[in-house]
Structure formats: C-alpha cells, structure tokens
Image 1: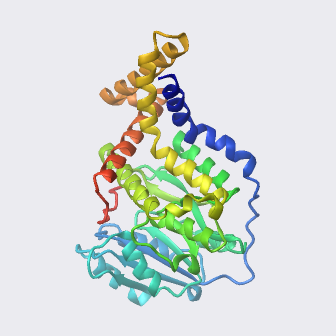
Image 2: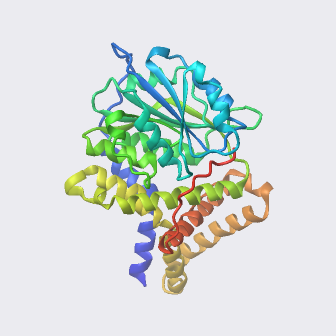
Image 3: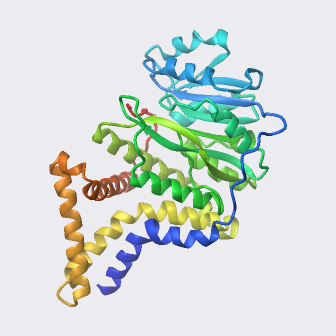
Length: 376
C-alpha cells in the first residue's frame, strides 16, 4: 500500500508540476523577434462552421478587415453540412472573394477542414472558428513567424471576452497553460495548438487525419516533416467566455475524448527512438495528464488505508479531505465558488472529472464524430 501511495502522489504531481520543471532546462530554443518576410506568403484563411447563421456575418466581416494584401489572401468557409442558412449567408459574400466549401453530409470538423485544405491555394493555411476574433495585424504576425524555416505551425494564445465585450483577466489555468506552451515551444515544439486559431504550412496539412483533432494533427505532422510547432505570445485569439458551466464541462469532455482517440491512432508518437524529446512531451503533457484522476483516486485510497501507520499519511489524508471540502463548498455555493482559493480547486476537480469520464467513455467505445461548436 505504501508503494501505491507514492505512485499516486508522483502521478498526481508529475504532469502539472514535475514535467514543467524537467522541461525548463530543455527549453533552449529562443523566440526570434518577428521580422516581416521579404515577400508575404499567400494565405488561405479557413473558417470552420456548423449552423452559425447568427454569427457568420460578424466573422466574415472580421476576416475581410484583416490587414493583409487581398491578392495574397483567400477566405474559405468550411461548412460541416450546415442546415440553418449559414451557407446562404456565406454565398452572399462571394463577390467579396469568400469561397464556400460545403461538406455534403455532416461528418465532423476535421472532415470539413479536409475539404477546404484540398481546395485551398495558399502556402500557409490558417484555421479559425467562427467564435474567434482575429486582431487586425494577426495574419501579418503569422506570416512573420513562418519566415523562420524551422517553423511548420504557429499557435495563437487565448484571451477571453465577457458578454459585455470587456476583456477578462487571464485565469491561473490559462496563464499556466500558456507558460507551458512557451516551454514546449522552446524544446521540441508544441504537442497541441489552439484549435480555434492556428496556422500551418501547406505540406504539414496534406496528411490530414479526420479522426485526429486538427491541433494535435498539425503538431504531429510538423515533427514528421522536420518542422516544429511554436506559440507566438503576441498573436492573440479572442473568444467569448462560455458562461454555462455544464456546457464548459461538456466541451472539456469532448476535447479529452477526441484527444485520447487521436493519440490512440498515433501511438507511434510515443516512440522516443523516432521522435526523441517530442515523445517525452506527448507522454508527459497528454498521457500522464489523462491519468491524473486515477492517480488522485489511488492517492486518496492509499492515504486512508495508511493514515494510522504514520503521521505523513495522516497529514496527506487531511490535506486531501480539506481540498475536496473546498470543492464541495464551491459546488453548493456559487458565491463561494467565485473566491480564488475555492475557484482553483473547484476548476481542477471538475476538469479531472471530465477527464475521467472521457477515459471511461473511450473504453466503452464511445467516439465523438459529429461536431457541435460550443455556444459562447
């Protein structure tokens, strides 16, 4: 039982704390200052949509206002068999250079993106969801990143907007994730990009697996083609914050389930003889994080069984019980949940509940095929 306790403790701490510490001395690649390329690359901006009639016009207006030479930019809307009038609204922008690529049947986000990739003509393919607002200089910043011949894909960094339009402060989790991305970017490259706004070289997108999340697919294909995927801290994507906690939970559940499915299809990426440091990053960031809820459960059970044997186990049990009592308080009281010292444990536990459910769903054979954009 003592061995199980220490395994549980190590597993619970590894992905979130020990992995970044191990990665820090390995993160040696320094970000180059953004320099405009001698000649701007041609860009295909692919907007993925399913039943977005309420928001598609605002998105297209955002795209058309971007500061990038129109002769070097094409805008495509990849419609996942929308049925609410989205396609008709997009067709109204044809004279302004917007192309509609419609999937004849609903087969998911990556399938619609694949059809757009096949139709795109740009050297750089930029992927964006309808809910994402791209800053006016966003494409020029992307183009500058690709002036580095080692870079195969570039991820934006996330910023969230309140319903009244006010920019929300970065939460602890978002700051942590962006920090970890920068460490990975300086090592073997990102193991996943911001799926709502990222870009990749055309050759990176040719092997487009429709059953693997596009952000992971792009990162993996970068390594296969001798590139790296990086984050650019000055490249921001603005998203409306999801207000409904049930919707946020379901979003996390779908994201993890799709991630597990994708990794199981690309298990070769865990082979360090082939992928080197990148394999270590995938193992640590993806696989070990998906195992955290089970390590936490193991730690709690082992602590309870050992509490009478030594003070260290009793203290461990007391600490865990206090932690989960805070979460329970946050569950019962929305007012209490707003306090930062309750919000962080509450978020951590609910996120890991979604991870645990996703793992169980995967083992039961459930897969996410149809894509349903989050209502933001």
